Image (cartoon, rainbow, N blue to C red; front, top):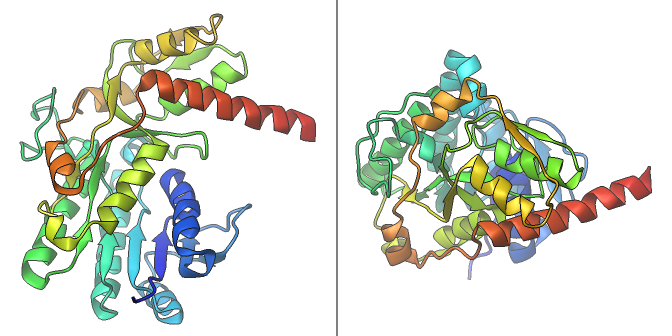
Length: 320
């Protein structure tokens, strides 16, 4: 069996940092090459500085390590992207095509590209959003994801490039900090709860959004990538669902374990972004085609987040 050599682009980000550790556990440190624009402080294994806009540098790394799979996770996210729309558009699309070009040149066997619920828009059915539906996103991030999905499908149809994708909901994890998205509040809220600090939320109390726990998001990604090619029927991007909740719901879940926790609401520009997205997702195809099932609901996630963060903060206090 051919030994996989996996390249992760954007390995220091919220998803990339956790995915790198998990893939290293599965395939071995020697077979996972992490790259990012900045050197991480705590990376073990192979790491290379890479500006994904530099196609030559990207190709050099692929050639140097004999890469067979690429996970392309580098992007300017929703909230951050709205503060610099043209840069976000150019970065997200140029980096995507650079990876495609290098994947084609070096005959990469499989590529992972993350899409997002941001690819949907206000005209998309809001509840149980179907796999195939109206997609008119209203953020640059969402527009770039929606376009790239169609290109993934195009390259499959024209060249049989095996590019796999899921539309991530908001991702919540203790392992890493989020990077400028609209669902970031749902990570930050747990940090405040553990530190016994009040939390001011940038969304309204009843704004429900689809979310997923990091452990489930990583497992979904790897299960999709390890599924036989004939099982992959959707060549744009798979809907992926786990749970849906509002800030009020997550606050109530936290209060079951931290009764004194207090939350206030001060919606900003991210409220409009959230309102343009679905509140819940129908992921029937992912379940049918490659056996997707989430393990965590809201209360299970809350228990796990609070336990891990409490441990992390107590260690930090000991160090100081």
